[in-house]
Amino acid sequence: MDRRPAVAGIFYPSDPEELSSMLEHLFLEHEHGPKRKPEASDNTLAVVSPHAGYIYSGPCAAHSFVHVPKVDTVVLIGPNHTGLGHPISVRPDGKRHTPLGALEVDEEFVDLLTSDMYAQKDYAAHINEHCLEVQLPFLIYAYNELGRSLPKIVPIVLGYQQADVAITLGMKIKEIAEELGKRIYVIASSDLDHYEPQPIVVSKDMVVLKCVESLDIECLYKSVFELDISVCGYGAIATAIDYTKRNGGKAKVLKHMTSGDVTGDYDAVVGYGSVRFYR
Image: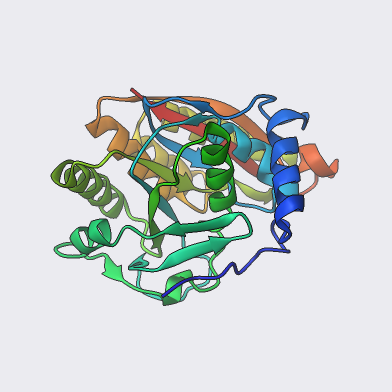
């Protein structure tokens, strides 16, 4: 079953030319963007990328798609904002359409992921969920810029984000990739702290990003819950950390910013971070 865009024209432009032009601006010209084109970087294992509207988090997200590996499959993981569907929901088949083209679900990978884990094949959690959708135009743009064929995808939406879920998921992703002999990388979709004054958000985000850069899952969960940091996709981030550790990788924060850096309103901002995990 194919999936049409749910937030095109809301979170990002629905017109292909307008969307391509905006992405080019975010990569090359925006003051908070990377000011460079995507480049081949096959030692990239995973990234963290934000998922707000492009005018807010797009410049930060562009940093996450500068270092692009040549892979067969991209595993996309994000939090469930709608409350619909299975708690660990994997979209099983079809194509994910965007204004820039479509990406095909890797059914072989999905079959193995849902065969002996508590992840389940499910459509409902993905119907109106934006967190994975907003990553897809960036992904397509980056691969097109490099002249590479588009990878398949495995879309995962987490209603349960406990540490044991993330660690099991990281383990299974690595095992399945090795079993199938496929090159993969992981995109963890998450914003950081939400709707607090700029100084508080920046302070809380720095705590989180320090945990992430240290590949410390325990630190991440302890910080999120004890300091009341509203990171929406902490389970997705923890999965990326676990997958990276299993592959002997490390992490580097590429960019941090807030919505206030774009709007000039610093009273109640949302934090965004770009992190690259690599060998």
